[in-house]
Image (cartoon, rainbow, N blue to C red; front, side, top):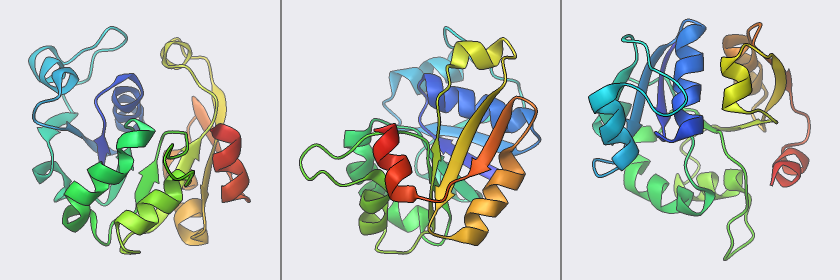
Length: 182
């Protein structure tokens, strides 16, 4: 599967590394002015991991053109403005929100923000669970949850993303999962 991961911080970089390790074609992308993206372009590493050569590093929004699925790992309070800026580039693509939190001004859950910002043009899922990049990189396995109102999307993502390192379970309560994670 061709995936784009938006967010070049610790978690976004790990997600790109992880999805590549389980066989997906991955593009890690971020804003042109992002210091972490520029450092990854130069050195292909951060303070936790080195990215394999097979992971493309690119700038938004051009990096979204070929993606079949877009995963997002940015600060919760930046989600709305990010999606407004890339709305036309993600229309029709599934979005997987790999972050936690609530919008401080409105109290909206992240899936609600994504639904509103895309005008319903995207199927939305959330990737939730405890996990620390350092532990995963040591090979310590963990369990996480993927949840969505779209059952086919949820089941497809769990099947596509599960491995011996991360075992995904199907969420049954997106509201409870998002609030619990926040």
